[in-house]
Image 1 (spheres, rainbow over the protein chains, first blue to last red):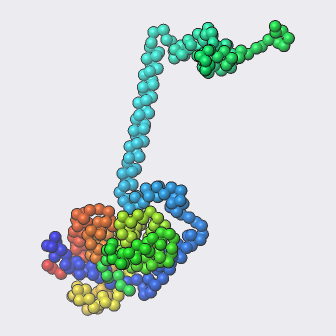
Image 2: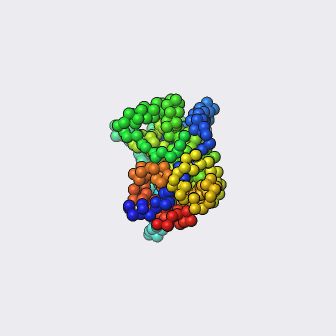
Image 3: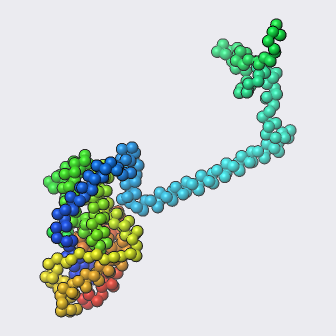
Length: 170
Length: 207
């Protein structure tokens, strides 16, 4: 390293010139005043920056963004990981779609089952025979007899709609 | 007012560091007088770093002010893992590099004047004495050539040269400020110097 330092002696002499470059006289006398007045103006104007607002609401996000500020290289890494997540999401969505199609194809190919509806419909037809269920015009939400706390079928849960005209009843 | 002094970071146990810690704590609570004191402490070094990176006084002025303002706004997130000085430097360095990336290929020199001592620096006098009998003109020409040569370097290389060879910041501190390891700092410094030497060959004394 010393050898390489020696190789750059002349260059270092030239670079010394940079140390003699100075701003206009009195420049630093007012520098801090300018900074402080700009900070005060920002505060007085109530024009809180996004960062300031985030400090109050989501300090963790500010810390997260500060990591990017100090290490800009991480932005690329973060963006890459987001893209990867997006791609993975798309791939898995396509896979689940194809899996659903496979299931449908299996159901259609099954003997005696013409369609998905035929697979799910029989319980509806059979429900009328169930002793605990009374036919109703209301949408059927559960076709299974609902038991009471005492284990008895709850026959009063669903009321049959009556279309008989008034006065014709027993 | 000189920008020639090497940067010296206060040791954690020194009274200066203790005082700085107090100032930082007060500034975090919104005490602008304390922050004013911190600005005064570091304004020259921060300005000089940015100026040597941009070779433009107006840009350096804006960026230095913005760096201090940003530091004040972000002070709540300063955990004290590094010194305030290093943390502040990092903000200024990142701000400057972002600015230079945006202004790519639009270099406009706005150079500061050389101080009185430049004419009497024996190293500098020796460099230009062969070139021209007009010493001032020689120095001004060298200053322009040097700044143009620096602007030809990539930002990371220029940053390392400015921090080490112009401002006297140590390798360790540069590594902490720039966010890379010391080996990278040394390697960048070597290649940057080599490139600079190529650009300024006419001013180099033969070895």
